[in-house]
Amino acid sequence: MPDQHFQSATRSPIFLFNTPTTPPKPDRRASSLNLTDVVVDGELTYCRATCHCRRCDFRVVFRSKSIPIPSYFCNCSSCRHNTGQMAFITARIVGEPLDAEVDKPYRVDILQSYRPKERVGVERYFCPTCSANMLVRIDVSKEEEAVKNDEPMDCALGRNRSGELTDENRAVGWEWRVAGGALRVSDGIIEPKYHLNLASTMDGGFADHMKGPGSAVLPLPWRSPLLPQQQPKELPGYCHCRSIEFVLSRPGEAAKRPRAPFPDLIYPVDVTLRAKQQNPQDVKWWLSAPHSPGDPTRYLAGYCACDFCRSTSASDIQSWGFIALAHLRELHQKPGEESMELFCEHLRPKGLKQYVSSPGRYREFCGTCGATAFWWHAGRPEVVVGSIGLLDANMDGVRAEHWFLWHRDRVGFVEASPNQAMAKSLQAGMRVWDE
Ligand SMILES: [Zn+2]
Ligand SMILES: [Zn+2]
Ligand SMILES: [Zn+2]
Ligand SMILES: [Zn+2]
Image (cartoon, rainbow, N blue to C red; front, side, top):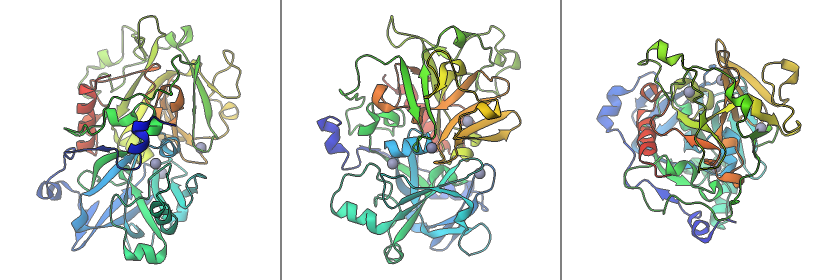
């Protein structure tokens, strides 16, 4: 169990942005909105949601007066392992999702659904082609019962903290929530206010990085005393349904062999000379200094705010760890002898589905629960990136700082992020983060 301080904290919003991150003013927002993505029609506002492959394309409705909708990052282990993200943000919608063009219900059976077994009444919907975690459907009666009885819940997805639970919701018995990053425009529509369920992160997770100005209700940084003093030889990770279970080992000689151009996280692609971007000095930038003198070398971790990551995950912010494929194995493979195979069709992990997001760029996700797992490209096949949210937080916390050095200077593709407020707030938070 988490320590005393966090036990009590988990029953309430445990980390409050005292000042909203950077909420746009209504007039500014109206002028910057693409009208086909957001349509204000009197009391109701219609927002369009799409995934990267466009298999998902629908609208959701909010009450105009409730925008921007105060919402929260759920940091619970269910959300992390179900999405691969550090935290998951959603907002309750009015009624059910609508078709993109006509006023009739959207055919949600186009999406794949997944029911986390520990969350009775919760059904998650993701795109079976590109894996974007678009929607959540919640049985209101089960949720209200749990709130009434003050039952501890692993995930507070359905709690009445954002949007508006209407009599209509109660009458029909369910509510729908849309993922923040599923909206083509979420900046100014959904306003992150809280971090919830930090106890299971064991180290504060995303809350230490994604801060609002003046937000210091909790004494962060915090590290659970239950975390082991000594790190294990290998760090495990898994998706929610455990179809994907992997183990990461420390970078050895094999991790130094690949050559790879710099990622946008280190040198922004659109302002860096190609000659420099290509890494002519062969810097092994994915390998980082040890946590403390005498410790093993670490891998590099960072955030990406690009539209590819957003639209394939339905999260505005994606967390990636750059790892040497040679040091990644499936749980059933022999330690030190075998490593994960991503190229050869019949040797790939069974549960892993692949989506080609652009030529030569491959996104790998769990075909059962929809968790984003890995991303790699043909120009850098031996240095892959993995979703930090899938790591087992009980070993080294969600941020796994004994295994990863977090890049503090920059959020990848921050300038191109469709959610400028969130991406810039995160970048500012990283720069002042006191490890
Ligand atoms: Zn899709
Ligand atoms: Zn959750
Ligand atoms: Zn899974
Ligand atoms: Zn990206």
